[in-house]
Length: 150
Image (cartoon, rainbow, N blue to C red; front, side, top):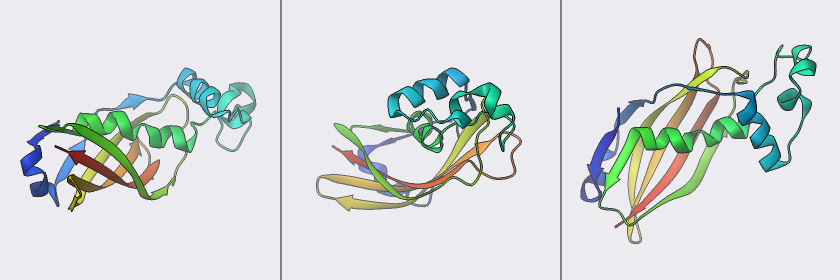
């Protein structure tokens, strides 16, 4: 469910659990496109036949592909009205505790840890966890920094 808030109320989000996104399935086509975009064609990602005999028994998504899903997931969780610019400012910490096997379904949970006033706007500090359906460990644990300007 999307939380909708106005720019003027952003500071009120500190400590807010934004909940979960819907699930997305990670496909081999998506992995192949990411490999082309990043020039990372390691067999564990793009060669399903060889990957079946690899350490995970199937091809896996690139960690950075899974991390990049935070972008569409983020838009499912928060809509800020009255802003002129939204900026993905960066990440403080990222870990990839578990691989995402192609065909897996993933979703994200996010909590706004802090809201800091910056020159001309606000920066949200957000703990993001991308989970694998049926998994025991998350695929990605990251602290994202997002800026909003009026």
